[in-house]
Length: 262
Image (cartoon, rainbow, N blue to C red; front, side):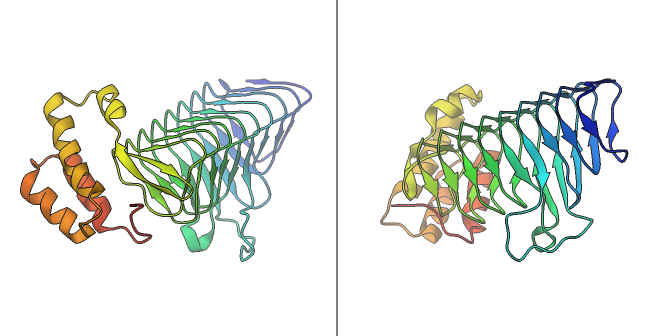
């Protein structure tokens, strides 16, 4: 185990012998850090408010603050609040990620292989999947859900309870106050759907037929004359069944915030 002598580590912390803790870090309370994770200087992990679990092979850069109390005026201190971070993530400079709250399920979660760039904020009870990119200064309020491989460009954000779907792209400076469906590009303040994320689908390795199938479904969604109920009916009638189409339909049918259409 490599822990710089200038760092302060709680007696409750469980740190893998293969982890590395840099200078001037503060690790407080019930914190677990897995093998191969590197914590650079001046990071603060954990607090007296709950527990933090960090998996393997993460890079946590200088000044990050992980596992602080939720920014929620109704929050009450309790021991079972937690932050869970998976494997292979890069968490940039001065990123803040808060613990969960009991009313939101108790856990804030960041999956695997995500890149959270400098000065981003991930609020309480957010649920982020795998392979996501949050570009510098992204701000997520509480209870936001982001699907696998989504990209949020610089200085973008999402209001409470918003969902951003798999392979979605939120343009720079955009703010979502409604759900952004999978496979879409959204832009604006407030963000609305603009197009199919063709580049993202191609980079993801979907074959030409499936990309065309998804784009056909998205054309119905982009048609402002159709209700969401009509959109779902047209997709089921005119698009080939596939896991991607089912994911899109399920997302539309389960939206509580509403879909961010024009």
